[in-house]
Length: 56
Image (tube, rainbow, N blue to C red; front, side):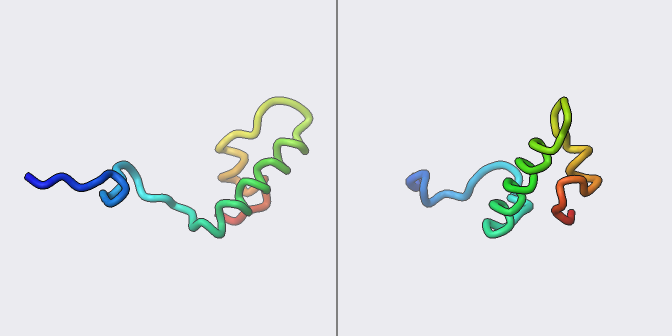
């Protein structure tokens, strides 16, 4: 059996759902949502409902 270096092997786990270009925009939108909240945490429910301003 021939071993390949780790950097040449496929990644395990789920594939990314956002492209690299969209990831930075999403992070900024979530940070804005957290800053706007009067208390508590921004949850996945908030993001899914579009409260952070990024279309899903």
